[in-house]
Length: 276
Image (cartoon, rainbow, N blue to C red; front, side):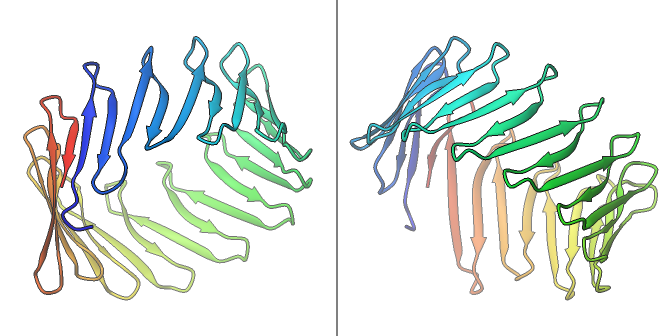
């Protein structure tokens, strides 16, 4: 509701220990060795047990349902036991890549990689195979869907995408500003265009013109933070910050020039303590 106040409370270590969301019930956070152990909201509580590495090994929801988690020596998740006693199992190769998932319903997903660690194939639980092709520079060139349809990508010498051909053969093209690697125009398959404009000094995005000629404007403070934006619908939003770049105030302007102001109060460490 308008005028609602949200407050935040932290402990001496800077950890959030309480959230007071206006008219809603407050939420408290109990920590143990730097990790959240219990989350309480009203009479409901979510409890977490962890191993020495901080990974969650057991989660208990407010209804008492328990989910257990197991990990390998590398800290990778290997099993999830759900409250209904079903289990999801994950297998990893020596390079730390996920190679197989056994789902609670018995289905299996498989993943394959090339010598450079890039995923080249993914098989879902129904046996449908998706394949990925890469170039020597590590750029994705083609995705082959289970039915044989393909999506292809082209790049310029600087690694920026210049064209994307979808499964129906429709091509979307991308152009970049001269001497820059900033996108200046996207040309859709139907010929419509999305244009991007930047300032000449800081190369910050200042305007987007959509396919029907509507514009989205962005203005910046001297430090590069957004000062004001005017959306495609003409709605204006302004922002004010403190000397450290933290957001202090957001002002949304209505069609009748009415203002909806959201204020943000912070402590000396920059942590949000109150939102109004």
